[in-house]
Image 1 (tube, rainbow, N blue to C red):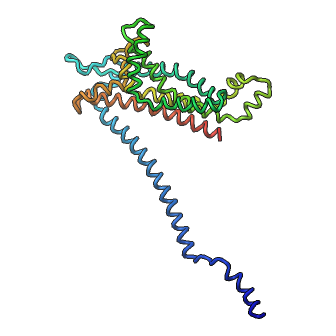
Image 2 (tube, rainbow, N blue to C red):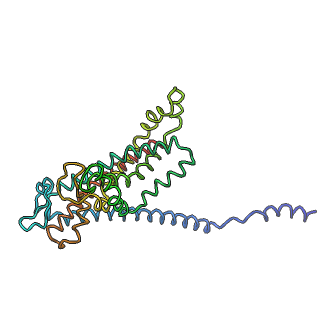
Image 3 (tube, helix red, strand yellow):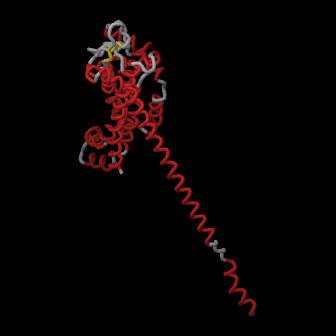
Length: 322
């Protein structure tokens, strides 16, 4: 009996799991903290490298282009539309025509892409059935993966001749052609981000609108789209950044005339196309070479500002959505 009592008292103690030594627990905690710190510093270093690369590009463009700005002068460089760096009489380095051409093509692309993109995003988010959305959205996103040289080739053989036939021009390589092609390239960005913004609008907004007697169209145009406007603006800004920085398409489809355009039917040469055409044929360190870096610096500032504004708007939209 005594042995049974002793065994009943001691068995639960023997069956309990053995407590881990304090040193082992402490080592596990230290190892976990070390891994968390390592992951923290890994991501911090990646962010720091991105900032260093950005500052490095900025510094390179500025230091390489500053001598040209000093030699030509700010007024002649930015207010003159005469770009002829290989003239035997007098070299000219005015980039006004390129800036106007770039803004003209970008504006034309946005005029086409914004209404089409927002309408397509609203359809996918609020009207289309799930099956249609599953089919259409991946197809639209595939557009973003088409190489720009392929889009430019289509501009030469398809849209260019069509524009020439419709408007009676000698050829269709002009700002209209470039605007259409850049609109096609900006559409996936605008549609994808706009659709996310529309889907993020709380269902209570739509239900309240329908409960007050509004139909589906009125709810979409007067409630859903205004509520998602900040996200839609961010989508448009990102699409604009894509259009400004595009090179190969405008190089192939816009005619490359370095003159100030007076209409969308005139051939144009953008800043990106000028850099792509001339950088490989200039003597390193020459005034022409440095002037191309100034063009790159101006283009960098434009795209940086557009992306910065779109990022700020998108951040504000995400904060409101949360």
